Length: 158
Image 1 (cartoon, rainbow, N blue to C red):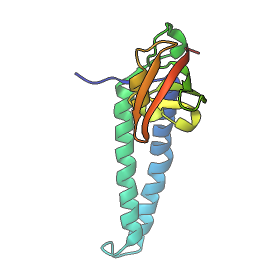
Image 2: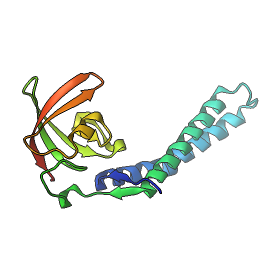
Image 3: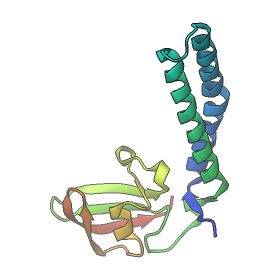
């Protein structure tokens, strides 16, 4: 059975655009760099050639990984979801019980996560601890920086 990759519609579109850039812009640029490096002669000691070949390998691997994720994508539109329990796509307002600071997160797919933008991965320790909980619940989270306690102040879908 093939594992589905949950993502938002925004994440799906972003990933499609990155694949387009890698194929239509980066791939031709790298091919041109390889051709130029070959023109310099001896490939065994040609740093530009080896760097371009390494970039080509990274680019093709990245394209392959992203196309695989896109083919297994399970696009979830959080605005169509409802309920009071935390699940993928939920927008949360949490209170840090140690500092009383309010934090806002949305639970998104792994590659969409960006803590600075308040987007946490579905597989992160905090998201795993929050899944299935409800507004008003307190949650203990074991993070790499130590234990944290949060109270779920709000669960929203838009």
